[in-house]
Amino acid sequence: MKRYGWALALALVAGIAPAQALATEQDGEIWTSAWAHGPVSGKMLVSIDASLRSSDRGTSAPTVLIRPLIGVQATKTLSLWTGYTYAASAPNGRADIKEHRAVQQATWAIGKIGRGTLLSRTRVETRWVDGRAGTGWRIRQMVRYAQPMGETKALLVLQSEPFINLNTTGFGQSAGFDQIRNFIGVNAPMAKGLAIEGGYMNRYIRRSGAEDRIDHILPITAVYRF
Image (cartoon, one colour):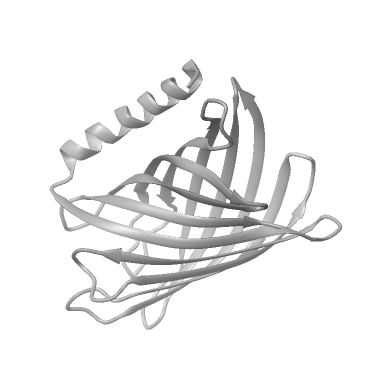
């Protein structure tokens, strides 16, 4: 691994350490996901991902998330997207939560850094929860670096994504910093267009009226590019 990959990995770990010290509640989770995306006609793109997220505490059933998007390849390095997210969860001792999000997204392939590539994704979500008052707005800014591992086709992946809430709502969203997800893992090709990505994600969540929480997550994703 070249110095760029090491530097980014160390920066990611340095960001995780303070969160570990601040959070008193911790959880272990497994996220299994499938994601397919690619062009369908000219510059038009489609993407759909689905996920099951299991927790060892706090929920009585896996959280389900489904997100279809349509997009356009605006330039060689920039794609613009719009779509919808449905998320359903079953917190222990509370009514099930069904959330709907309108999604607008810009993905920018920034370019090469050393042997790897840097990508930015800015996502704006408008959020509603069934049976609860309010409309929430949230910005998610993801930065992802992927670098070849030696002479193999596998990639070392480093990723960070902070979430910022733009307002406070009746369904529990509080304005300001919401959470940050930091990921380190490997993307390994399995067949033409198909790769499996897995690793470790550290999610730090700010909570209003309760201690902040940190989740230790094993994400496993099948990625198909057509």
